Amino acid sequence: MYRKLRQAALLLSLFSLLLEVVFSAPAFARVPESQAEIKLSYAPIVKDAAPAVVNVYVRHKAVQKQFRSPLLRDPFFRHFFGDKLNRQRRNRMKNSLGSGVILRPNGIVVTNYHVIKGGENGEIKVALQDKREFVAHIILKDEETDLAVLKIDNRGGEKFPFLRFEDSDKLEVGDLVLAIGNPFGVGQTVTSGIVSALARTRVGAADFQSFIQTDAAINPGNSGGALVDMHGRLIGINTAIYSKSGGSNGIGFAIPSNMVKLVVNSALKGKKVTRPWFGAKLQRVTPDIARSLGLDRPAGALITQVYEASPAQFAGLKIGDVVLDVGKHLVDNPRSFHFRFATMEIGGRARVTVYRRGKKLRKDIALIEAPFTPAPNKKVLRGNHPFSGAHVANLSPGLAEEVDLDDIDGVVITDVVRRSFASSVGLRKNDIIVSLNNNPILSVKQLRSAVRNNFRVWRIEIKRGKRILRLVLPGGN
Image 1 (cartoon, rainbow, N blue to C red):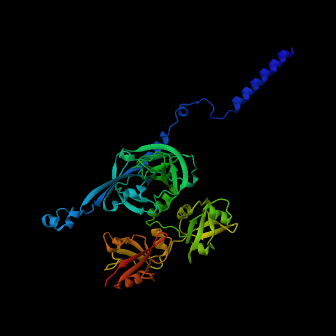
Image 2 (cartoon, helix red, strand yellow):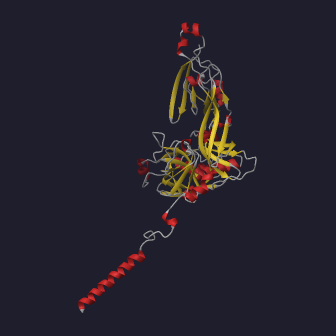
Image 3 (cartoon, rainbow, N blue to C red):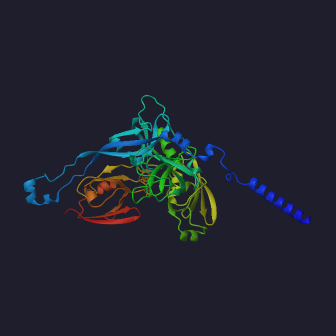
């Protein structure tokens, strides 16, 4: 009898254990109960999002370089052939292809700047998923973010399919995403992947860098296309890939939708893109700097200079402060700070956290435009001197923001005419003219006056990036 009771108790405990396993099993550990659960698909998302992704065709004139044969240096060949060995400069038509995204029912399209570059003097066409084509024109281009906004010529008043924005700050690594575009010109293609990383800054595709990295296949022709989330909303514009072969290696980059939204809103208001001025130089925090300041890890952006009468100075920021976050978003380096700061609209205030001597301080920064003071006074220099062919301007906070320079005073070269004297001596765009024959150059007016002198020797000092270069050139007699 005792043995039978023990067997019954054992069976009862086993049955109880089985019931516990069955009823406590997680939801995914069960047999699918419907056709939808058996066959998972992105098709509903694609069906909603894909019609708003378009192909962008650009056709414009490109000038071929003039070819001069080295044989013409020989008088013998020049006597018999004259200029026949020279290939004259001529225009040829150049075509480029990319993708774009419709963001308004009236035909507002966003794409990459590098897709439509040169299209100002040519023709831009937008092809919809249903094969219809429309002519489009540029209403705003922003080279710093590599974005451009187009408007479809919609004389019939048609309503186009469009995508809505999603807040790109809500993205997390591991989120599922779809990339939609026209790779290699084969036609609209959809690829899937995940968000591989956020806030990538060392890509080199734009000045304001904080890219979304994804392993969704992105190839040439995808530029300007959509990166969408699982709700079919736009979270980024595909813009670059990391590849040695030209094809996808599983590392693609997209401009976050929050930056895209800022550029599109500027276009809709009929304004150029204006970004707030911080007014301080920043440097990456290295492990050595972090240890010297008492930080537990190398993060943030170190302030190395604060400009006079700037928002940073008015907010009480000082050299040696480390900016840790802006608007509750952590700052990893100066590039990530500039991106976060640039996405804020003019007119409000931004709260930043800085680390100073072991304490964390909150500071409010006024969001204002960088002033163009002094006036640029842009000039093209001509004459028998090394600066002939150089476009120059007075630096100011506003101009420095436009050309992405840290310095806010002095004279900067904004362009150099090809085959000019300035080009032949090695002067480049964004060079800052520091001094001429040991005399500091502070304004365009001063430089124009100085180059009128017939110097026997030209001693030129320029700043290029973080380097100081010195040129010594022969002058007149």
